[in-house]
Amino acid sequence: MLRKLIAGNWKMNCLKTDGVALARDLGIRYAEESDPPFDMLLCPPFTLIGSVGEVIAGSGVMLGGQDCHPQPKGAHTGDVAAEMLKDLGCSHVIVGHSERRQNHGEIDLIVAEKAQAAHRAGLVAIICIGETLEQREAGEALAVCSRQIAGSVPDGATSENTVIAYEPVWAIGTGKTATAGDVAEVHAHVRAELSRKLGDADSVRILYGGSVKASNAGELMAVPNVDGALVGGASLKADEFWNLALAST
Image 1 (cartoon, rainbow, N blue to C red):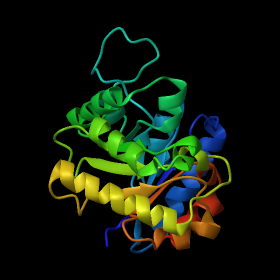
Image 2: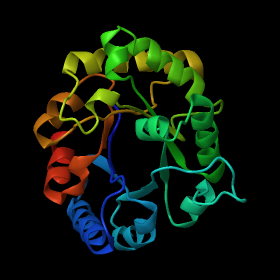
Image 3: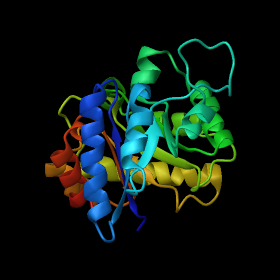
């Protein structure tokens, strides 16, 4: 069993005072654990990366970005390069989140280019995949995941530089959660697809995301091939996120 990774995606939430307080609280809790049984990652909005990095420094909590541009620099107004994230102390970056795919028209090729950029900068790319409700109801969930893995996971991806996050779109921020059986089926399929693409994928962490909270984390994290969680709303409350992390082990 791989060590669990509990990642908080704050999305477009928190001003500086609240974000710093949340990060400091979690950093103190993690540092006070003599041997934390899980890895913890915080992915605040770009405006807070520097401030959050300062308050979690030395705690063991890792820092990540929510997106990056494929290019290392240039005339890309409003974008952030993977190298810039690395320069701020980030170790990870999320790419291909369904909200980016839906709201910004990102296709698999763009996601793969962003993952390659992360690797170039020395970051771990958390590549998100997942089906919509319509696709699930049409029986296409596994096919969608296969297609996204084939198109979004770049050559050169390894267990050291890549994490996969399965987030069924219909379960993100809706309060709906896939059943343990649903998660088991998809994660086993994802593991098999990664093995076909990468060769040896037994050490690649596959996270589950979609309305994960402290009350259901234990059940979901016990499912085979689930190696942690990518958490949205529940990561904005220190007690909830910490209890979720504890329940995952």
